[in-house]
Image (cartoon, rainbow, N blue to C red; front, side, top):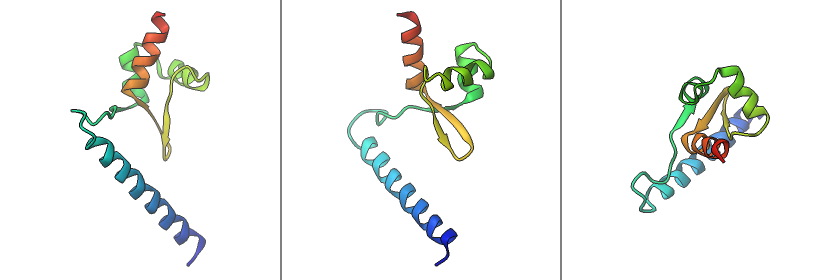
Amino acid sequence: MSDRSAALVAAADALSAAADALRAVAQAGEPDGGLDRLLSVDEAADMLGIGRSRLYDEIAAQRIRSIRVGRRRLLASGAIAEYIAEARA
């Protein structure tokens, strides 16, 4: 098996494990499964009323949590709520 094939198999296994974990959380009894909606940077910036560049600055400064999925940067709706709560405090 080539290195590329091995990497693809490992990635598929990791995705499968993540999907299983998400299913377990969803079945835990919470109405929404306890999962936040993932928003693009554009959607999150619109929600916050700031520009994309400012949002990227906030992410870089670790004032708002985000995740990378491939080349995309996504923000959980809960992370946006936390950011707003901290800004109000």
